[in-house]
Length: 224
Image (cartoon, rainbow, N blue to C red):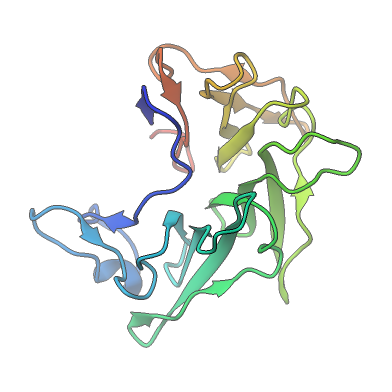
């Protein structure tokens, strides 16, 4: 995403007509036709509050998103939530157990749905900088593991913002970072080879512009 204005941390959730073979039951009820975007699950997921950053689980039975600052507290709080597809409708969203006290943003799932990546300004042990970093949790039998910050090679340099991760099946991660110029986010990529992330590279002018570019989203094989 690219623009020349300030960076929005969230926006209303809209849905458009699905692509061919969009997926299982919940996807089948997305609006069809050419009349344009619709509010998604209006009154349940899309409300007068500030929601954004939505993603479906691979089977279409879960929808994860963030609800930002539905109170007047400062600093800002972003709570990661999930809604379940039950008997043909979306359930009342619930906060994920590891979220709720800090600014958490943009949940993204690995292609197999077993790992979640998200941006968070939560404290990092050993660091005084309160910036957005990329964290991950693993799906367990009981829900989700304790969040862990991605290695310093991704969340660097100290004091810079990194967020908006999207991960391919081979582990390659695309994400937003202002590591080159504070306050000017750009899209970066890091390959995952032999069990570790390689040095991130900023993508070229085909992707990054002279403005702010953020929130990449790729498919499992990196073809889109």
